Length: 298
Image 1 (cartoon, rainbow, N blue to C red):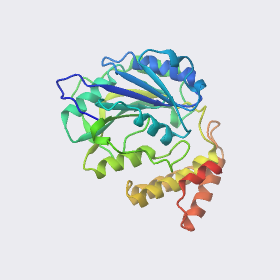
Image 2: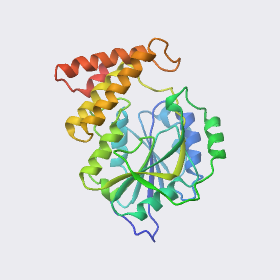
Image 3: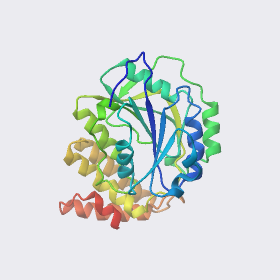
Image 4: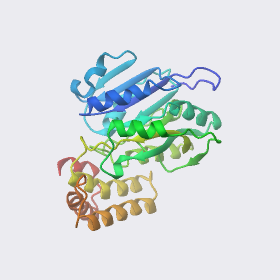
């Protein structure tokens, strides 16, 4: 994969791993097409024709199909990015970009050749609540005032998987860990750790804005996710793509939250299922079994 000079036209690919959200994805793609810097190619990485819906006939968009699972679908898309592309953007299928998102990411890459990955600033994240409708997300973006001050790039351990961009030549040969099955859970942090291990930088910038709708449809079961909440961070610590302190912090915060909130759980979260998965994960950890793929069979 090449890397064009900052003065030349860079070829940009935007990737959407998706499953079971064709109508929402259709609306999200419309926001990509409003970008001040247009991508040259959009790849929808899915499992069946139904996942792409009407998008299959859209010019400049390619639909590819493969095995389910976020990491597997991301990897399938990476294998299909043309070799002459310079920037690869990966977005969740429920992430709405502000119109200047790609432009701000390119400015970040221009600011430092050591930057290999940029993640933006999320104005509102529905993952922490019941989620936003597309209309609510659009309204939040419409009210957003782009930052007119200087761009600030802050180093971070890993990108936020709902919105991340990569300098293509810097991630050549890297892949998402497919042992992190289903929703992935920390697969973005693992990928960021691989980037850091190459001596490149992962940063968050204050000027690439967006809204993560946090759509609940298509999420994995509480028990499966709860298992991943325990096992995946510890597995990454063993891989050395996440510091042990960070891994333990992730595990303790999630288990504690599930214990406290399982008494009166939020309607949109299966807290008791997550806690059950947490306990299975802790027991596997005690037995020395760091097997993230087991989540698929719980």
